[in-house]
View 1 (tube, rainbow, N blue to C red):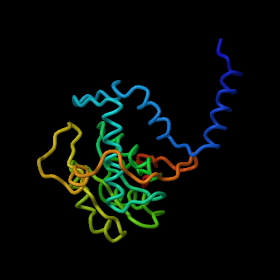
View 2 (view 1 turned 60 degrees about the vertical axis):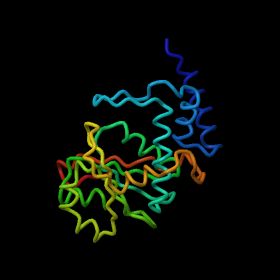
View 3 (view 1 turned 90 degrees about the vertical axis):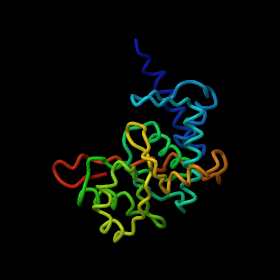
View 4 (view 1 turned 120 degrees about the vertical axis):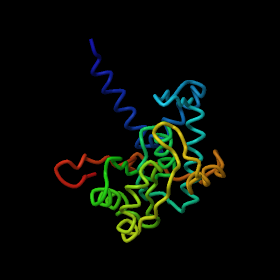
Length: 209
C-alpha cells in the first residue's frame, strides 16, 4: 500500500530545503552528474549517446557561449532546435545562469513564428536572442525582417535532427568550440526562477506560452 503520509512528509522536507537554499533544477542535475558521471544519460535514435558527464561538459560550454553573447541572468532565449541530445544540454546550460529558455515549436513559420519568438523575449532587459538550428533557416530567414524589427538577434546552430552537420560552422558553433567547459560566473539560483516556456500548438490561434 502506498505510504501517502510518508510521501507528503518527504515532499514537505524537500520543499523546505528548496526554499531555504539557492536551489534550481541544475542543483539536482549536478548532484546526479557527480554520483553517476559515466552512466548513460541519453541514447538517441540518431545514434548519438551522451553520458551524464559528457552532457554536463556540453552544458557548461553552452553556459559560457551564452555569456559570450551577452545573455544575462533573468533574460529569456528563444530556442528553435530539433529533438536531439544537444537540445537538453542547451536549456540546462542556460538554466545554470538563471536564463529562461523559450522552447519554440519547430513547425512554426511566418506570423506564428514571429509571435512565439517575440513572446519569449518580450521580458528581456538586455539581449534578445533566437538560437536556431540550421534545419530551420528557411523559416527563420523568411521572418528575419519582422524578428529584427522586434530587436531579436538571430544566432544559428549548425546541427540537424539526424546529428549531421552541413559543414558550414555557424556563429554559435564557433563560440561553443572556443568556450571553456567549466569556467563561468556563479549566478544566484532560486527555485522561483522560470526554467523554460512551453507553447501551445497554435492550431486555434497564435501560440501561447
